[in-house]
Image (cartoon, rainbow over all chains, first blue to last red; front, side, top):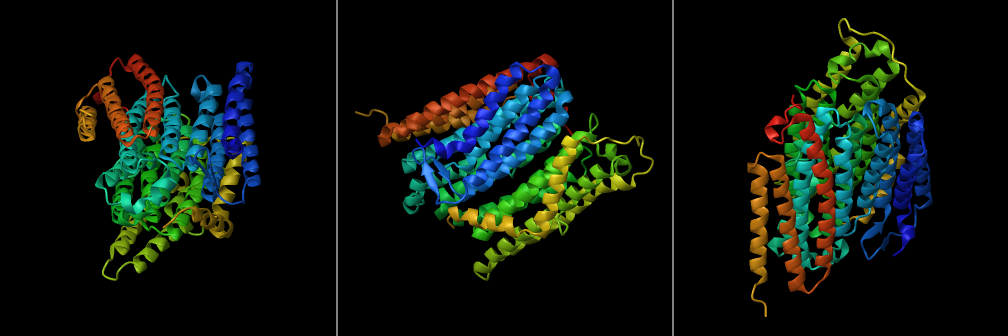
Length: 483
Length: 102
């Protein structure tokens, strides 16, 4: 047992426990400070993570826990999400009725679950990390106990997440039965022998189903819009960014560390899931009037785009997934920060009318986020999609000349992007060109929102214009995977 | 020695899993759905214990303990959530959960 491997996770858990204790002696008027303290603590842990970079990959804790470039990349991603979401929570504080201290603590525990997931090198750790996330999210989603939509979203998330967990566990049982181990590296070592057993295929398929729930991909995507709409906005942000990224790191690890032999066979299956997910998300988003629900469908579509990179089964595809997730983080965080400030009791898109005159900063930020989600250059969303498509085309070129599967899928994805332009630009139109906005009172944006918002905007543009550093990091990180 | 073979354990476990899945799909009461979900988890536990016994590998049984512990915490949170919903709506039927619609 090498505890120094777990420094970052222990740091987050320690921070959570410290906040839980300090909350006892903090008068209610000052609890907002606790949120700021949590954000500063997470920033310190994020800074510490650069101290740990470099060095060869290490596997510890009985082969369960891997510390490599991939894990570190995702841990930084999760910590960055954590900082932004905690700050969002401070802004959202009054609407949480009670228990703001506990809200932060559970948020940090969910974050620790995601960080453990990033390092999972064994199906046992994969399961425990996923459940640590899920159980925390049950509480977080239904945190506004007096608000019916929040409770309903919580119950829906609970039932479907437990269903996904049941599939995951049964899949793990089958894998253990055939392979006599749950360790990723040990399973990979016997990959060729195991691939002859259909029970092993079934087991992995069930594990992938369980993961499809986390990333909100077909066929377990139907929870996303309901839960995104009902959950408190900071929780929606964490679900949309953190939970999805955690699902993808687990998917990459399962496919390309534990079962690279099967991953190539399943490219077709992943492509199908990706195409259906993209079309479903984009088509269902068109008639939506509730902005959070719209982002729920958009998140399904984005899961589809990200699956393109996984289905490409090559290093550039995996690196594109990492890069896309980094861009997606700042884009969505900016959107949810604006939603947090502007949409206090009405989440209808119509409530954004006249936002350009009420607060140019917020309107500009949301507009940039929508433009980036729609994939317009030069923002992060464009380059991310471009890299995903390029990886897919590379895959198509590597396949036999008669197979046009990859090109068909790329075509479907482009159609999806074109459809998405419609509903993303509808949001921008309401903000800038709505007729007779009912409310033109200026919105005062506090500094604790301005700063993270500015960081998100700068990161969105920086990632789009100068992708070099992050892309190099992503390419380095996916060296932990085998194709 | 072994009166019951691995196949038979696995068949029972698969049956339990399918019964649980059927319950989740068919039943309309949230509490019953939740019970069915637990049945699915226990089907996996049975499979793990059987594999563990026949492979002579205790790791499977350790994993069963993990699953039991996680399922217990899930039930604690889940039942609290269902009780909170019942207090608001006086119902535990899924059809009544229709606030979140287009």
